[in-house]
Image (cartoon, rainbow, N blue to C red; front, side):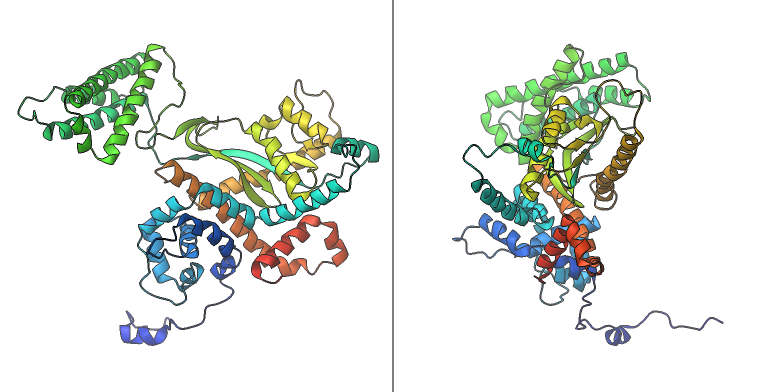
Length: 510
């Protein structure tokens, strides 16, 4: 038997069913995550962005940073983020509001302003702080200075010489290195489509300049836009055009774009004030299209497909093609990110739009580990691209095992112990791949929606920050379970003790 129930609950019944004044549950994830973020440390850096002479009061740093974290963690748009914060009292507590309210003290357009105010350096410092790197870094640096002052005046001896004398390298722990591409929110670029888009934008610029010119009564210069559009459509409808058809279409669009550029330059020579009739975006597009035309003309005339600083998007000229060689996408378009995974936390080694070889980041990452812990790692787990002669020589000098096969021909016989170590290294190296997968699957890193280079980098850094916050929350949940182990066994694992101490410090227990 299924009991009969009333239909829609009326508003007079709803008011007695839910009370906003009810206390929040301290076990909620947003309350726990709020305790893991060093808001005050970030606010000290954030407050330097404002002038003391201004009469306007800015929103608190926690409100801005907390809203951006909510957006990246839930993978929402600006409008959706504001709406969901209005509906959830836990989210309002997370951003620092004292009482629940249906009206927020900011508009959804403030999210764009907050992303502009926050710099990438500020985000990297916050990522390191949440991961326990910055605070421990200062302590370890002071310890190193004390140790160096106790050494003799004969130079103190390098660390490899000391290890050879004692027979003990003193290396502990391991770091995992890898790089990935964060695709941008752009259409897949082709030469013909980029030139056709440039032609359409130039035609709009010509129309606007002609309407505001003193010679508007004279006939407008011919741009052959109908003919150009017809030729582009005839090419775009072909499913698999061969190389000759592609070059023919590129040549045709190059001619139309060249004519439009010549017309605009002629109009500006006669009336330089016409440039003021263009919007800010049109002026930026005009500069970008001129560079794009020179690149496309060079590639067409020299029969090549690559050029330095190649533009693949008119609205986002900072984006570069990143060749990754993956099965689903051999070339991706966006920023390249190098991560260093230490003790379960992710740290940014390098973040830029221009392509680079990630093997160059191994030595700086190891030196950062040395500065953090006071000793070199026992192993560096990385892809085979990191195994070049420079990195191998550096790791051999400091007694570091670099995972992966040796250079040259494969060995005829491999010891069972070496095979087991290689298998374990490969399985542990998947942790950084899991971090990339988590960020791209849940936090929107698979398609960066930033429109400028600064905004894109800040959003990527926020994704890495969210990964560390979630990891810090996981440490908090396992904190009391770790105390169940005997204290003698706990002292043997320096990193586990370090994680517990940092978690207690963030939560105010110590």
